[in-house]
Length: 225
Image (cartoon, rainbow, N blue to C red):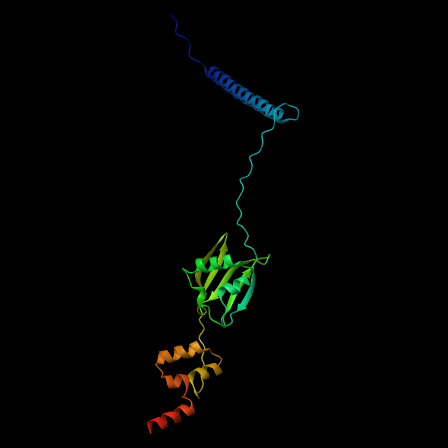
């Protein structure tokens, strides 16, 4: 038998070119198929949503409702100065409370503070809504603390609250002429500061309140004699 002649370089190059051509044609055919499928899919989607196509358009999902915080009603403040002998029931009934509501407010506030301990000369702060109905009551227990009673539906809720303190350092000076309290008052300060000053330095009653009346001294002399 005669051996087959070896492939020449020209034959190998020709076969490579043929392979490359087949690969390029196959890739182009695949791309064309994908383009045709894509166009058909888009056309079918457009025809589905077109008017008169018989298919109802898909409703867009409704946005989830976000709960809103209720707006607190605007309240108007009324100050009532307590006179001697005035009770909490009298104050409330004069400002629209029924006797039953006044009793309920007192009873439901009693675990927090006894409103029968109101002091003459102080103020009760009443807060009314736009219709004139009292929604909140405030009363100062001390310079810092106060009780707040709010209407909550058919009940009243009482709580003790404190004001934010503002600390200021001031320098005052003067001469104690009659009493420490009067001297502090002349400087524009209140009695509690004079009492705290006296407690801090353990000052005697004579310096704090001043000397006793003259007739009292004369009476003591006569009694001593």
